[in-house]
Image (cartoon, one colour):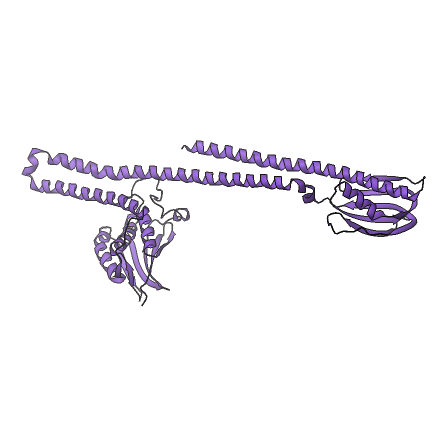
Length: 419
């Protein structure tokens, strides 16, 4: 799938999700505004009904009032003259209950001098609340009410619907996130596979071309008269054939690793002895590059259980990388030590080093550190994938420390044989 198509799909999905979120937020806001407006209207009606009944109870024909209401839920009621007040809480409680208004009313009653003579609260949310009974003589002239407009109470009738839509939105967000991750993984996998095929084509093309060229020479009639050349070209064909064989085996081996078909032939292994054998066999290659291979054996417990063939391959891969990725004369140090219940063998090189971004992917199948268009290092990106998987199958692990332009240290952690 092309990068532009993926990007456009993700952008459209983000726009769609943004539209859903904006719509839901808008719907909640509009619903809340409507509930607020309805709440204010109902509170106004209930308060007027209650005050009207209180005024009627006074039997004062010349008593009237002015009621002010703001959007915050506050009422200020001014009476034309002082009057006797009774059944105040009961009247308000009854009217608000009948209008199904769930709130808490804080009230202040003041006299004709605007002095506070009573402060109280009417709780219409608590079903166990009982109105307080009190009376005042003809001194009351102002009542202030403050209503608690709890937003969750206002939206209580729609809370289930809101929760459902929120749940659906979360599911959609989760599905979108998962889909995006899958698409990006597939894109990365496609790129890795394309790089692998290109790299494999390059790796196979060289030996095939060499074999073809050598075969053409061998088909000449006079070549049998020159035994030295005949042997030389036959050797080239044999070496390139072995090279092709190893490349094919590495690809097949990676397939076996993924399918978990590799069976380990576990035996007791003297790691110091094995390391000595491998480093001795590696010395000619190091000398070819005028390099140096140093061994430091500090481990006191060096017996482990494992498959000697695969452990040889692991060590060979890391030593081989130390040479392949050296941008100067290779200096390789093989160091052993014991760390808790592990035998640790560290292979340090002075190569190009690995960046922090590449460290996260270096053990992935087919991954190779990018080097632009320069194809100066052979391989399919399977070596370190093999190392990591084999270490896990041996109940151990591999760690990496690396600095760009300084070098890398790969440490293999094997469980030691318990005595």
